[in-house]
Amino acid sequence: MTIPVDKISDPAVRAFVAALNANDQQAFQAALTPDATMSDDGSDRDIAEWTEKEIFSSNGHMAVESQKDEGRTLVANYRNDTWGEMRTAWRFDVVGGKVARFETGQA
Image 1 (tube, rainbow, N blue to C red):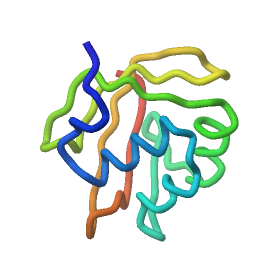
Image 2: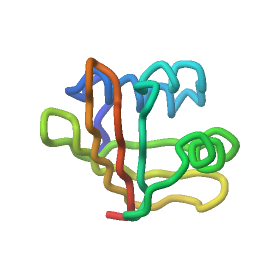
Image 3: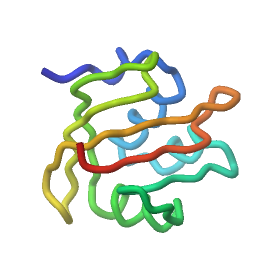
Image 4: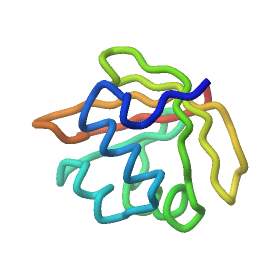
């Protein structure tokens, strides 16, 4: 059972997921703080490089299964054209209504 994007509790996380699923780079950037950071499987990555490869050029999509911490921790089935589909965990730090850091990895 997936949670509709509009039911994600945190508005910044909701904007992040909506932009990711729409493959909308402009809206995705608008959901992040200018100095946003991220990690994948525990390793910090260059956010612009990672998002281009794992989201935008490979048609990334999140189907959210569960949320906790007021919508700042998600479990989702993530798929893209490179890796197929996998169960992933996402944790978000939100500052001033925007995502300042996200951490993802296999769940």
